[in-house]
Amino acid sequence: MSSQREVRVRFAPSPTGGLHLGGVRTALFNYLFAKQHGGDFILRVEDTDQTRFVPGAEEYINDCLDWCGILPDESPSKPAAFGPYRQSERKASYRRFAEELIESGYAYYAFDTAEELEEQRKVHPNFRYSHENRLNLRNSLSFNTEQTNSLLAAGTPHTIRIKIPTEQTVYFEDMIRGAVTFDTNLIDDKVLLKADGMPTYHLAVVVDDKAMEISHVFRGEEWLPSAPVHILLWEYLGWKEQMPNWAHLPLILKPDGKGKLSKRDGDRLGFPVYAMNWTDPKTGDLTKGFRETGFLPEAFVNMLATLGWNDGTEKELFTMAELIAAFSVERISKAGAKYDFEKAKWYNHEWMKATPNAELLPQVEAIFKQHELELPSQPYLNDILSLVKERMTFVEDFWQQASFFFVQPEELDLNAIKGKWNADKTAFFEELTAEFESLSQWNAEDLGAFFKEKVASSGMKIGELMMPFRIMLVGGKFGPDVFKIAELLGKKGVIDRVAYALGLLQ
Ligand code: GLU
Image (cartoon, rainbow, N blue to C red; front, side, top):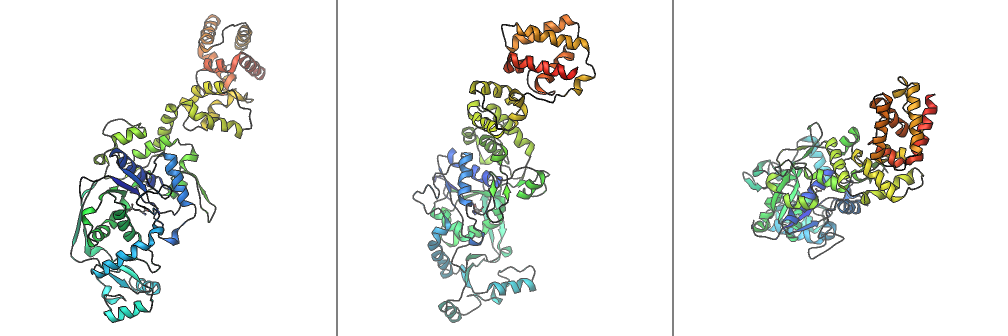
C-alpha cells in the first residue's frame, strides 16, 4: 500500500432495486473523502449477477446520487479513462485473471453441477466448498490433468474457484477498525468465475479496483467477511503493492439497536429507508423514499453523515462543503449507528428553516394545484411561508399550518371558548371590528397595541380574548403570532371572520 497516491474511490452498487440509505451513506463517505483530498469519486455498476438484474435500477441510482448532490467524477454516463463502468461490459477482462490464478496454483476448475452441490447440502447441512472436502469433489485438484483437460475440451460447464490456503492468517489494517485478522481455515473456496463466464463479485471487485486504480475502499461492514478473499486475490494476482486501503463502515441499525435496518423495518415502523420512491418493476409495489416523504436533499445528506460519524464537537448542521472540510476517517465509529427517524425529521426541520423561500416556493405552489386553488401572489405566499416555516417539518406541512389563510375555515373549535362566552365578549369583538374599519394602519404591531389597549379598558383579561380571536381567524388553537395572522389576512378578512364566528356563538 503506497501512501502517496492519488485518491480514487468508488461506490459500487448492484442495480437490484431501491437504494437503501446505508448505500447512500457509503456513497457519501466515499465522496467526502475524495473531495477532501482533491480526488475522484467513481460510480461503478456491479451488474454481473444477471439473475438479480433489475431494469431501471441503474437510472434510479443515478437519480438518487444526483438528488443528493453526490456527483460522480466518472460513471457509466460520464465515462473517462477507466471505463467501462458497468461490470457486465468488462466481462472479457475477467477470465484471463481467473486462468492466471489457475496457472499459478491459486485457483482451480470445479465441474460440480448445481444439482451435485445441492445434493451435498442435503447430506451436509453446513456444507462449504473448502480445503476440508475439495479433494472429494469434482475439480481439477481431485482429477488428474488428463481428466481435467478432456472435460474442458468437451466444453463441460465449470466454475473457477479460489484455493484458499490452510493454516494462514490474513491480516490487514482497516482505517476504521485497526488490525483485522482472519483464519484461512474458516474461509471457503469462493467461486471466482461462474459457469456462464461471468465473474463473481469477489473476482470482479478486485480486478476492477485494480484497473480503476482505486486507492481507498469505503464499504459497509457486511463486506468485512469478504475482505480476506479480496486481499488474497490482490496478493495472488501480484498486485499487493497497489491494494487499496480498506474502511468498513459501521452498520446502520434498527431504531431499537437490534440488527441491521432493513426496508421491512421502514414498512413496519412507517418511515422511508430508500432514498427515493422505488417501484418494483415485477410486482408494481411502490416503496416510498425520503425525497417523496418531503426530505430536502441537504437534510438527508446531513443526517446520513451523522450516522456513524461526528466532527468531535456539538455541531450537528453541516452543508456538503462543511462536511467535505470536516470529514475525518478517525471520527467514524466502529459501533453500529442506531437509526432515529425523529432525528431525521429534526434535520429536515432545521434545513427547512435554513432554506431560502425561493427554493421552497415551487413545492408550496404545487400544493395549491393539488387543492385546485388559485395561486396567491408570490409576495403574499412568500410572507406566509416566512411566518409558518418555523412550524414545518416537511413542505407539505405548509397546508396544515397555513391553509386557513386561503380557505376560510367553516368549522371553528368553539368548544374551547363556548363555556366562558358572554355578552361582554360579544360586545368586545363587535366594537373591535367596528373600530378596525376606521384604522388607517394595518400591521401586526399596531394591531397588537390596539387590541391590548382595548382589552385593558374592557377590564377583561388578555388571554380570555386573545385565544377566541385566534380561533375566529384560524379555526383552532394553533398558528403563529395572531396579530401577524391578522395583518396578512387583511382588514376585510379579519372583519368577516370575526362576524362569522360571532354568528356561530349566538
Ligand atoms: N457490489 C457491492 C454492493 O452491492 C459492492 C461492495 C464493495 O464495495 O466492495 O454493495
